[in-house]
Image 1 (tube, rainbow, N blue to C red):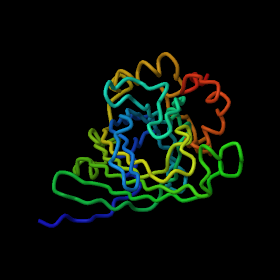
Image 2 (image 1 turned 60 degrees about the vertical axis):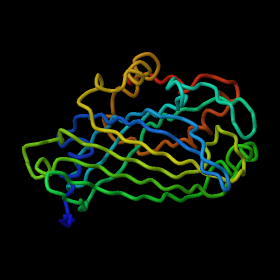
Image 3 (image 1 turned 180 degrees about the horizontal axis):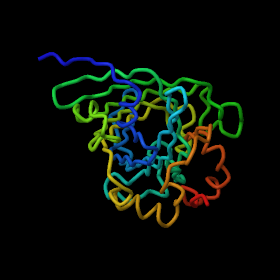
Length: 269
């Protein structure tokens, strides 16, 4: 049986990624990060656990604004405990770990979204290849951390949902959404790899969950005690994306001082 490629409209996509009524939805993922270095065997450097809280807001022209916040924690691959310090196996240096704390992550949804329909399930495939100037390369003090002139990565997403819920206008947000996420990217700045050859390979899976209380306990504990901002999606677009590279630049002094990351962020009033 050959799978059918079908075009879905923006509203159908919105209830995959978030919800049509403007309420927030939660997504969580787990996986591993490996080194990929020429002529070297792979190393499993970290396990990861992460979450996103998002909402979509409809515009007058039937397009939608997507706004979200996301956390990802780097875990010891043997114990699954949060890493606050990491010994670089190539340089032997012990470094402060900067976890992912991106607020906000935003997008603009419009047009149609192709999905691969296989009977009861439909899968949306997004292969993204972000390439843009690396802002850290402009400053001499970041040469040991991220000297490359260009940031280049591959982000490969597959989101699978029940087909019938896409076509049911009474359903505002799909009841099930499973995500597969693979990423090929450069060394993270905090790893202090300079211009050493190699990449990071991410392999993760996840799903939409019903509420904050359905997130992994580690994430609930971190958000409840240190990162309450991430309990809710922004109420409106903030018109600025946070990335790990921008975050590193913003908190470089705290990184050098060995502070615990992510830096605490409390919920908005």
